[in-house]
Length: 283
Image (cartoon, rainbow, N blue to C red; front, top):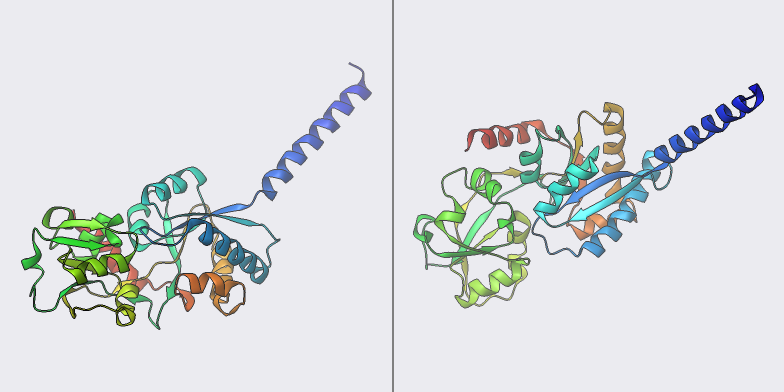
């Protein structure tokens, strides 16, 4: 091969390598969004996530379509997405964060604030005067949307005092209102509610008065987490700043309203670290 021909081959090869490199850089970075057991439509959530990411890109001064989202309400699918997509950033429940923290080197970045708080309490609701204690519900039926994460409920919500999958006849539901209507009719003995669901009780037309026989300790709400090995500190700070301004933006407010979020605030290690310790200690 003549010198000119070899030179042409090298130039073409270099251009191809550059084109491949540019294409790889231009691929949107995946953000996995997990909302276990929730009633939110995946199509609706992905549309709202698209609007949110455009806001994040604009506020954080990234090029448009720098990020793409993968939403799921399935715990198993979330595990698969975290493993297959290997995202530098994800939005997860506290339970999935605790479960996947070591495997994916997860670090809390921001938390949502809902009804003025960044934590919530879970409650076991029964028809008033029918049951007096959690102990009296052993072997009875308990509904709710939160049973998609049984280890989280056992270790964190109940602090290891009971195992719902063993001690109760759990009946998972995609909608809290359906479980509460069944409780109202006497078809269920109890319903386990998270903080957001409990706050909405007053707006429901229930015939039977309800009472809580169990109230958990304060449990932090989880939001954006980052893979500490594949994300840089400046990237985490930049994305956190963009998210903190999202709920005051017209487009970003759509997703905030969808999940009942008032704002995103910096993650509080003082609230989250005890949850990590409890998760590790409870077998």
